[in-house]
Image (cartoon, rainbow, N blue to C red; front, side, top):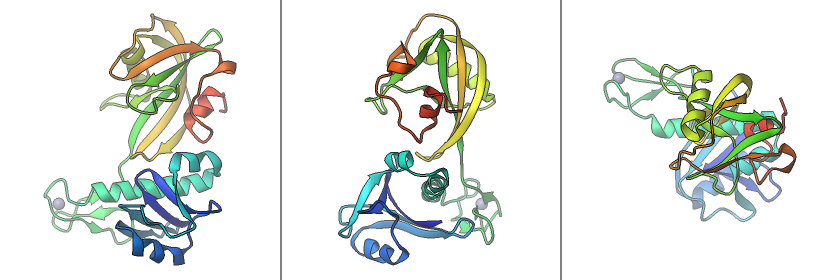
Length: 247
Ligand SMILES: [Zn+2]
């Protein structure tokens, strides 16, 4: 529950790090272009999606959601994840993909419905895998080519049509690092609303192969001592939980 003001990958908080009050929303709307405002009754979310954040009222700041996740409870994160996911979905799914009609709000569900062909459209979720590979007492971490280049993280990727999550783990690892793994074990999941991933976390043990990096995706990958890791994902992420065995 609460008021979520979002812009790109940031959340707007007051100077004490609190969510805005309902009465603050109008002030923020008055000075910034916004995409839409919506309410979701199920979790009592009030969401204002901004197009700009250049003229926030005094005492409000834009904070990267990634940092918000690091320092808030699971419940607070769930509401923020949901607000961001729903905003992304509402922006991207406005027309029926079958007949092209403008969608309407579903009367009772968090969904949209086509007034012409009556198809229902629910918030989209894209399942992904993220995996930490162990070899003897070392873990495999990789620096990606095009995202978060400043940290070493786990190998991750989207599950493709027809695949199981375990199959996706094997395929992604082989494609990106040339390694084969065994003992693939599920360790937990996390919503990651950039824009709509559900990250399924796994660990696996090295089986065979030499590191051979897919250069378009992976800038560097190495075996690290878990007690002496380079800069890596922060608390609040599933990657942190995998790396620090918090499962
Ligand atoms: Zn339709």
